Length: 482
Ligand code: 5AD
Image (cartoon, rainbow, N blue to C red; front, side, top):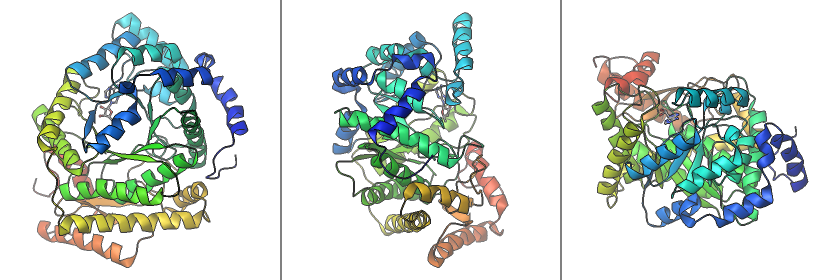
């Protein structure tokens, strides 16, 4: 494997495709030219890039749930329900865990068990096993764009089948679907496998088919400082653009402090535009994820968390928001609970759509610091790769220059400790090997010391623990006397 941030030539790509399509019998259903013709016939209402572009132009925030069950008819019914009763703008298809592990045999058993039991025995939709024709049944039954949402380190066959099946958006990336999800898959391997996915999307694009790509923004979902997730989002955006991707949605997971969260979405868009300037005709949009960490058990409290995320998404003018449900603490939501999360969110979006968080010095300062931190990280990544971003990324993870808090991967240094400051913004308690300037280190230190004073304790690991559980217990900042 020779990993370089360089567009794969067509021969190499076509050679790899043969092998990928043999990984499961449904791979035979993919005929790329026929799939392109099929995609071109889809109505505009089913094309994610069209919907996102329109929302961006109108400064609207669209809503999208997560949802997926084992069987085709039940999956269609679920998605129709979320359109009718949840008034969702965009549709997902969440893929089950076996498929994410490329374990199609177990997925097959799960499909059979589900039809025997009369209920879903998988935690998502096994799209590879269902194949191209069945994916098209889902697409054709619905009047909104469908995105594949998963968490798959090697997502090549899944991409082939779902894109041929009429899905118009594909989530994930070589870092964001590895480090938070896998223990021992090398970054080199996943970057390579995701170059394939991006090359496939690039190929569709060259033939006039708009497929949107969305790196997974929130990563581990808990206390991830914006400059960490921004660095990863921009790297994955650049790697995708090199392979020919033109429609990109970059994401960020809510931390909980309004000013920091709005600054995060604004700075993400501005930074990404700056870094992507060498690629023509990129349609860049943003996604804000409602809180991805631990939720309260109580449904009323959960609606509080959901609504705060909805308000923040609206005020940040993110292009779309991924919505949580009042069942978050319990597991996979019922369709009713899923629709409730959507309706609560839509209410806030509608109420706030013509309002904006007024620019002020606090917002400007947050944006400035997020940009500084992100640029310092990215600069070192480029340096480590001697100009090659893919090589730089591999080396940066080895060196702890890229480091994701609370990740299971053995390829991640795991030296970082994030904690909230006195206003609930997420700061670096320990920045590990991140290449930060003295100014940045001092800024973070002062913010945490100010909280320490308020709580009459030294900033320490105990703060981190307290913060991880705080929202689940009904607070944002994990104070000693909660
Ligand atoms: N349907 C709905 N939500 C799901 N999630 C995972 N799988 C599904 C599914 N099949 C949600 C979890 C969590 C998030 C990461 O994804 O509940 O909110």
